[in-house]
Length: 293
Image (cartoon, rainbow, N blue to C red; front, side):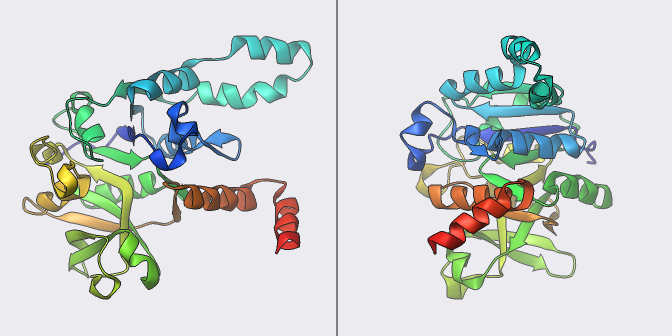
């Protein structure tokens, strides 16, 4: 069956982010800033710039209210105050925020097991049976290009694909930290499976899979709470691997640079990358770092 081109994206942030405690007991991890914007906004903008019309954010019960306020509250009081001070231009980032596509925030189904597949399964009711859709993990940021656009463009070339996933080549010494792609056909770039955190010498390639997927509703056959895997968790990569039994899963290389924000060290490196590439105070930061070395 051929599915309609994606117009919806599911963005997941339903974990407890224990490596960032105590701040994440109150603030969802994807609300931590990268420059002047939270991680979640960068991810939402990536979707919007690729033509996505509706975004479903899957959050914890505590995070749901935070996201709803952030993306729907126009901060009228701040707008009036800035106007009275002759600083209307400073309100522009909020105005831009209010012009993002339709955003719906839901809570992950508490009956589902732990695992990165459960937020996707929780959003099933928002996906029509005849449409493909995009899944984005808010842990992951991409600079320099839109992976979501790459996925949608690739789907135009492979309309019969069961799924399309994004990959980035990584140095050999870190292959044991990520999910590594084994290709079924290197010329066609079709997936065989994803090996989670292999021993470096056993890694089937240097292509790392991360949280940028284009999926068809067929995935929900496998994203079933009863289909838990390692550590009794519901894993998205397990479901994607099962989809190769029904047809081809295409692997696309990112056209940008992927960085994870999943732990404090990598979060800081992503923040630094953003500052050095996009902020006008980058030279001052570089000088400060050089003086510290």
